Image (cartoon, rainbow, N blue to C red; front, top):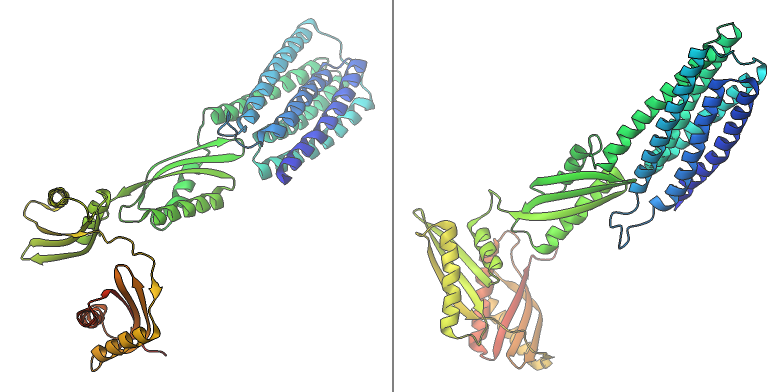
Length: 457
């Protein structure tokens, strides 16, 4: 909201300044018969029209995207700048024709006095102030319309100097000085129009800003998880930088991790460019450091299968793969066997026909029904049994024992402690032995969930 107010207020001030100076130069030019001063007045009149257009355009160019304008309204600034360029060429052509006519016919020089010089000096000061204010506002808001307006007023300063030189030449007796100055003003206007047209057309045809591709590529590649960038396109719409990229990410990443990469990529380009709109398409690719297990999990995930306890062994260059495959408990055996065979075939396609694959089919464990806490006496019985089974082993301090009764059976949770230096596999083996002993002693126990932790500091 602040940048919009800044743009409109600067443009509004320029309207009054353009109108006042154009009227003053035109009146004095008519009074003394100076084509150069009249030409400069007409130039300022075009600037007035341009400023009014700019004031109107910037009021709508910052509007957000809607159902009919998916990329916002920023291109209106480029279109308005192109229209002003056309006006400048028409004006330059008219001035050149009149200047040529006066030079050919030898029109008498204008009447020289101090008044036109005072008007021109004031015009130069006003235009310098306006050009600086507009340039600053254009840079802060990245407005192409305001930048074009600033360029107008900067060129007006040169035009005013050319008129002053022409009037001085006329005062010194060179009758052609005024007409030559008018022609010089026309040439300046034409050169200004050429510069504006080039910049505006490049924006309208979606040319990427200088260095934007490299800058955006570096920003996105700096995000952890982005392997490479397959394609990146940049274009400007008003003050907004639109970036469209296809980035490669590891195929082993879960969806939420990929979404985090997208969010970080948005933050990176916002930091690099300011006002940006990023379209980020993630393409999952295989990495060189993927393990065999990683590749098998990708195959299962892409097939929509639930697998666990994937073990891989390399026996003299031959891969041995074992997998637990969970299927619907009500599925027919022949259908489940077909699912397992399909998984085996895909693994062989990935690793070669000589890989040995064993798939253990088991029912997909349903969500356990709602349960209730067991009685304190039952909890103490289970806790005492766990402590007994752990006695003399590497696992100790059985605590936080909880027992819940469900329709599927008893669910036991407990915490225990182990030596900090013990490996995870060793801890698992010892805890697993305790769990098996508990289920043998208490057949009603459906599931045992343990949590091993190091001793308290």
